[in-house]
Amino acid sequence: MNGNTSFEKIGEIIAENDSFLMISHVSPDGDAIGSILALGHVLESMGKRVHYRNEDGVPSSLEFLPHAEVVEQPSEEPLDVDVVFALDCATQPRLGEKVLHQASSAKLMVNIDHHKTNTRYGDFYFIDDSSPATGQIIYNLCQTLDYKITDIARDNIYVATSTDTGSFRYRGTTEHTYKMAADLVSKGLDVAKLNEDTYEKSPLRKVKLLGEMLSTLNVSDDGRVADWCLSQSVKDELKLLPDDTEDMINTIRAIEGVLVACSFEDLPSGQVRISLRSKSDDLDVSAVAQNFGGGGHARAAGIRLDGPLADAREKVISAVNELIENVF
Ligand SMILES: [Mn+2]
Image (tube, rainbow, N blue to C red; front, side):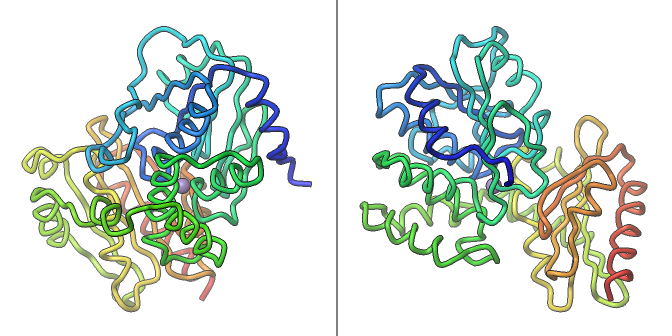
């Protein structure tokens, strides 16, 4: 079998323990924060003691999530907890150094995720790469174990899944995803309000950022590869926050004829963050990412390379072109 721990076994671990630490990946997205809040709050409603930590905290764009105020950035001392749940995080280092230190005195770690590249770390794991979001796995877990989905968990599962599926549009959004969403709506979820909070609140600096990035847009001669760049000087000038570039790449991914979109961003560390998006089933950009020590999904992957940006760009664009030439 795939080695997955059964939901029933995860249920036993929950039943037999009292205190929990919910963690996810650095630079968290809606699925990361939504998943830890959803499962954590269900555990709280069962009388468990639950802590929530994220290396980078909750990005301002996700502060609207109900219960988000409980997520703290890690402090120095390891937390006295029984069990760590690591959710939506493909590799253990991606949980963050300080978070891992805070998690270090727990008895065991349970890793639940949907990334194809998950390394199956932890004492127990449940990896389902057919699920479009970890939030949907949390929903399935609650349904299987007959846990009551609290109102807070309901909203967080919905936003977790919505943000990872581009608002229920991308491949991987299945009949089950829509049935889950329908069930969440039947439990009283406010569709218009949550979607407005998720998608219709752009700070002015992000609209200006779009203009800056479009001015660097480059499309290959055959029209199949589009890329753009974000320099540290533009980030400083617009006073960007770390998550402001989240999902921006979808703008160039949407260009007609483009098969792969790439985004290159200077990080304060001197490294370059690279995001890759594929629009073709035949082009697995996680393979390109893995060659550079990165990871992700077939259609959405990421890499970090040493700068300068121009060098990183040259290497990655040529690897992307090679991938396309090998396939077509
Ligand atoms: Mn996810």
